[in-house]
Amino acid sequence: MTLRSRQTPSYELLRECNYDIPKLKKFVQDNENKLTIDQQAAYTYISENIGLYFIDAPGGTGKTFELSLLLAKERMNSRIALAVASSGIAATLLEGGRTAHSVFKLPLNLANTETPTCNISKGTDMAEVLKRCSLIVWDECTMSHKAALEAVDKTLQDIRGNKKVMGGVTFVMAGDFRQTLPIIERGTRANEVQASIKSSKLWNQVKKKFQLSTNMRIHLRRDKILMMKMMLLLRMKLLNVFPETSFVWVMVRYVQIKMVKLT
Ligand SMILES: Nc1ncnc2c1ncn2[C@@H]1O[C@H](COP(=O)(O)OP(=O)(O)OP(=O)(O)O)[C@@H](O)[C@H]1O
Image (cartoon, rainbow, N blue to C red; front, side, top):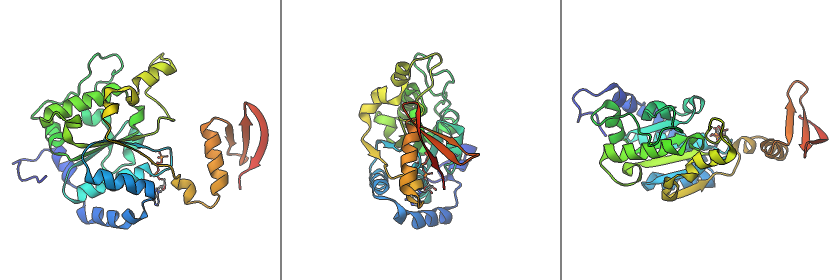
């Protein structure tokens, strides 16, 4: 997607095309061969096939690493790749990342809007970017309301004039359902599950679901087994950490059974 076809490229287009290509090439070259088997499977398939994908990645399994490589590979070939995330913090971890609400102009009160739509009209600068892009990655997608995803699908189909899912663009959702689901004010757990992207009609249209399972933070450290056990206990809410003493209490069914010294 070159800029030549538009006489005065918009700020939005310039921003998405203004990457340092030699730097991206070096990043891809240096890191492609570091991918784990799980990461490689997702990376190769997604790079070669258009579709809607989900990467199930518990914390530390290299989701940001994988998404960054996918974005860099697309951008180094002068194609437009958009990086969005459900939260501002997650957005800052991806090069050129912005929140999904900001990029797709989503309504704020998604849960109470009957058929939410993105506030992007055809012919606008953002519509031009969405029309030309070839890859969209959405990190922490599991935190977003399914209505957001459905609104984006409708908008992309409309703007790109393509009735395929997500208007025929490669769309990668990444996240972890074991972490925070969409927040529903005064809602129950069931309401949250009902609002999650897994309950969306689009979930059945996900072409492939990938699973990243190697915790890279642990893998890159020496004290693998202890850390792995602790992460599991932490996730199960069976562990308390007291950083000031560097001691942890391991709790089983709310009974303190063991104290472990962190070395
Ligand atoms: N294949 C890999 N080779 C070398 N380092 C890797 C690899 N995958 C991930 N890492 C490194 O492991 C660490 C954790 O990876 P990353 O931040 O991508 O995980 P994450 O799944 O996004 O975690 P979180 O959800 O907690 O943010 C980072 O320092 C990253 O650079």
